[in-house]
Amino acid sequence: MEPQLNQEVVDTAVAHDGPIETDAVIVGAGPVGLFQVFELGLLEIKAHVIDSLAYPGGQPVELYPDKPIYDIPAIPVCTGQELTDALLKQIEPFGATFHLGQEVCKVERQDDGRFHVETSKGTRFLTKTIFIAAGVGAFQPRTLKVDGLERFEGSQLFYRVKNPATFAGKNLVIVGGGDSALDWSLNFVNEGPNKAESVILIHRRDGFKAAPASVARMRELCDQYEMQFIVGQVTGYEEKDSKLTGLKVTGADAVTRVVPLDVLLVFFGLSPKLGPIADWGLQIERKQLVVDTEKFSTSVPGIFAVGDINTYPGKKKLILSGFHECALAAFGAMPIVFPDKKVFLQYTTTSPKLHKVLGVESPVFD
Image 1 (cartoon, helix red, strand yellow):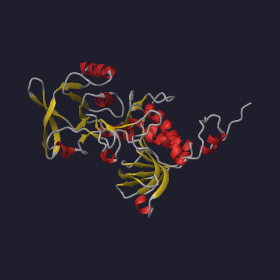
Image 2 (cartoon, one colour; image 1 turned 30 degrees about the vertical axis):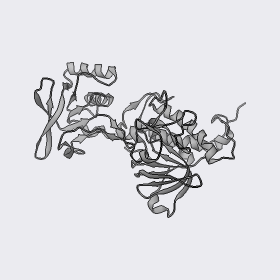
Image 3 (cartoon, helix red, strand yellow; image 1 turned 90 degrees about the vertical axis):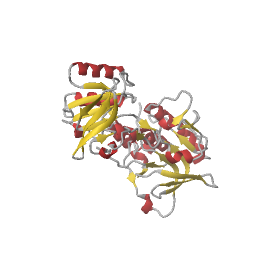
Image 4 (cartoon, helix red, strand yellow; image 1 turned 45 degrees about the horizontal axis):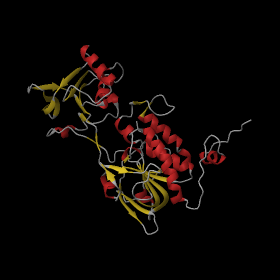
């Protein structure tokens, strides 16, 4: 289920003749991009949000909407979907405008210091600041390289799970050795509405880049004959009547076996693709944008980068780290957006001004 979006969504390609003039453009509508709206909103900076997906939520909603997240402060557990819905509710007072299903393809600095931004749909902006919160960029799942297998993508071959119920009662083969492969294997073995008929996990070696507890649980289920684990490489497939019926798996003993299936799930992780961002003249290190840690500015003044797309000494790719970066980036943008305005740190618990911005009543303390 896609998150409910109560903010304004505009097909700007037809709704505006000229460029939209704004104080801030946020590239990316994942959790960090959404929280950037909030931090800017507290400073009375209005934002337009652009995302290549047709809905907000980014990587958590696209790749694991039902997978639990445990490290969001004050929220013991939530799914990617629930986190997105909560963030959308939190930013409602700030009236952000979303431009979805389009990618930023051009960024040019103007003589007056603003940036001309254009999207793949022809939407144009003149903005004082840009906040890049594009996660790992235009992320693409790494694919299983077997000639001809791509024909089954979307029908029997999947690189992400949007609706687990789709795979209930099916004979599943899951390929991969990371957290996603282990988590979904355990999910589909467990009793419940999404339980599969059978689950076979395939990985190229008997070692995993996954939580040790998940690996231990998988081995326990194999010992109980609740699922199977096969060490080997996928080297081919079998089909009948244009349907995928089995995978050819070559083991360490060089013997190739056919593993029957209804559905194939592949979890090889994401391939970072900066896309057009690579052409914006920003300092890049290993496909990530280099930023300072004072205001999370990139090498181009006025362009900030927050979340997984940036890099700096000690960087940790956590959502909560991205939230912290949003706050400092918002304050870093203030001298650009409001050069004559003094900025003071205020607290949402006690500031009447922030209460007004948030549309809440100021509490009365005895």
